[in-house]
Length: 206
Image 1 (cartoon, one colour):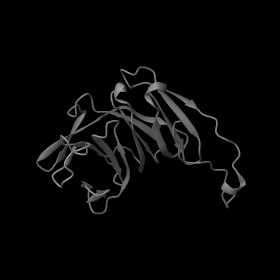
Image 2 (cartoon, rainbow, N blue to C red):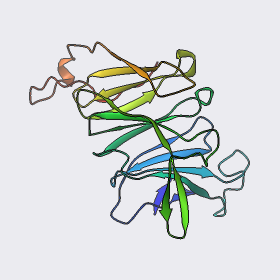
Image 3 (cartoon, rainbow, N blue to C red):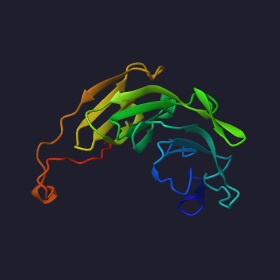
Image 4 (cartoon, rainbow, N blue to C red):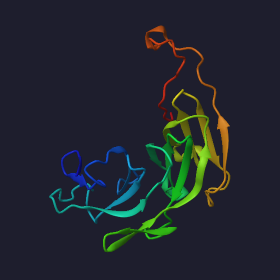
């Protein structure tokens, strides 16, 4: 059982599975999590769950509405949601040197396939832009604020950053990459003892 704060409890895949990241959508009514088994799961809050003034009893449930097995070929480190005006896309980054943009459609049932879960079945979101390449293992990814357009930034373990901008926000299949300049020097107090030139491996938009 994966426990978040006090009232939110989500089932993981197994007792041996680890959650690497959890990301809420813009309204806080859906969340995505990625696990050590290379799986991405999408959960949706039931009506009133998690909203202001709602009953926070154990009856407030989150339901898994989609699942992507083997979403990457290497460990998945971070997830980020796009803005609703761009269709609520989800982007994931991985040790396999790639980022993937996922899309579930305007309703939770839109899917590219069905994943069996016991007697039930779960939709699998479409990889609209699978395997966008980076120069190294990708350890962080963040969608930009909506006023900046439909774009996201990703950074590798050695601190190299790349921005991907969507050519057509109504399609989400074509993304133009642009490498960013990284600071060549770091303060002496932040320099690694090993003498490595690695930069920060995390990013965010200002």
